Image (cartoon, rainbow, N blue to C red; front, side):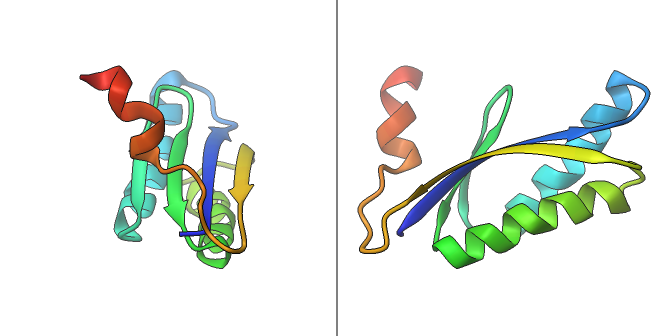
Length: 98
């Protein structure tokens, strides 16, 4: 693993229920990738190979649009270490959930 990303997808829709529905579809897509991920209240963290993660970030926008959202914004944080060695999700959060 040489990268991790945190992505917050913000669908431009008319109701909170629609926001949740679209975001749930994006999370379902992230789950389908088979990568390790962690859903938080404001963003989802994913860890894996940099190139694969960048493709997932791109596809999250398309998933939101296909879910019926006319416009989508996303905030993305990227940690990249070409030789590997980024902190894992478990290293970052496990101690806070015991």
